[in-house]
Image 1 (cartoon, rainbow, N blue to C red):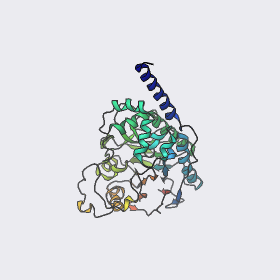
Image 2: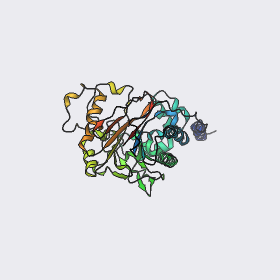
Image 3: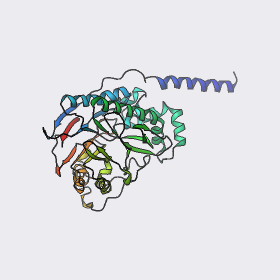
Image 4: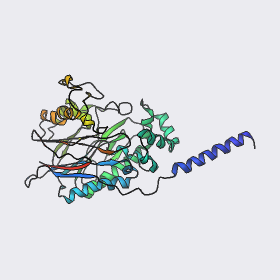
Length: 378
């Protein structure tokens, strides 16, 4: 056998073995999801108030994202508990946390990804098992963190489809409105209530509000102030483009996590006379709320920030002072709520408890160690 034929045969054999390895471990059914639910609380029971925000703090683990059916069933469990507790009506808006859809990057992939000890190992396996698609997207992306951007572009169409199908079906099944956390997608748009992406466009941290008919209402909400860990691959939208939605329960604005720390989004909401402000968030690190606050992340501190608070107050105290509870009083909004993503996602950690303000007063909500559901009537 000539050297050339030997090399060709070796390459073909390597590709054949890679194909076997790449497709192995993708199709077997994952375990049934668990809620890890600690708290179901109607914060202010009332027979006269007709509207409510249903804040859900899900406890997500990596295997919840291995296919769309499992992701759907996991969230369906929380909504089913809420309905059985009489916390869902046609005038309910469900609030889910930031990045709830982002880990759909795992959907359809090798199940071993969920068993890795850390994020780097999981993403390395994801790259190797999709090396040709990844390489093509890597060459086409322009972000400074080309590897992360390539992963999200590579999976963008499947992620968008899984995300849309999940929340469209949930909104119809439970006959309510859903502020569906957020997801990383390239230049998302909405046409006739359907979600579209432009794979060549900038990546955004995006949120959407679904109506009871399963359609997306209005335009995407795109994060205006990406944090330091997002900046290498996520673009920020101009604050002026943050939409306000005319919903049956009132005019509603949604600020994705860090956006709630800046005065400009509240000015936009106030100009549109928003009644409701929703904030989906994600804070990495176990017990991160107990740590000393390190100041603004990804951008300069706005005018009015007491720089002496840096490393003096806790992260939790900073959230209360500089985010939703401290800023909603600058608006005419009657009610605001902030929920966080919790769970075990490799070595990332997660922390946070819901924050809520009603008619100028901060509400006391019972904390949940893992998952929780809180309903606020207004």
